[in-house]
Amino acid sequence: MRLTDAHTHALPESSDTLALVNLRPGESPAGRGENRWFSCGIHPAEIGRYSPEELRNTLEHIPCAAIGECGLDALEETAPEIQEKIFRTQIELAEELHRPMVIHCVRKYYEIIRLRQQTRARTPWLIHGFRGKPEIGKALLNAGCLLSLSPVWLMHLTAFPDWLEDSAFLLETDESTLPLSEIYRRAAALRQEPEETLAARMEHNFRTFLGI
Image 1: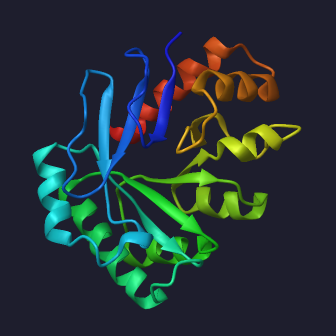
Image 2: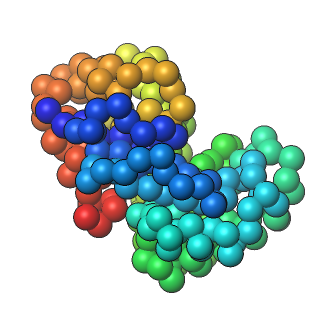
């Protein structure tokens, strides 16, 4: 059984694991492999630390399969208008390079939806670490986004969301210390399906998101 990690900050220990590994602009991956893809973006917490030019260079040099994580964060000190400007720059870059985006969002979901509609973005957007309410999740899905579920949120659920269709979500470790296998075990139990079935579905969704 092959597992998929839709967003992680570390190279998986198992060479069999399919993973989208997050990088910062200017950073080079410590290791590569046929099951490794990379994303790079300017996180809201790192605005001013990296330039769009550095980001473009990294995207083309690695090369990276996706742009992100990037987005909007209500808890960061950087002014909302500056966050939005940098995010718009990365949306434009994603559209130009035809790369999907990994979105970081804290208490700004409806602003994310507004920007997707205003920019008429066509590349897929993955909302990573999702732990929002059903109405927020449904609004994001209706706007054309996918949801990568927060491991912590998943572990506290008593039932899998019935509004979340099979093709609409992915699983991730992000910076969690939980093993990916445990996350899959929990998700499969909540969905009342074999882990092998879930793993195959997640690989399909992952490959569709990245266009591979």
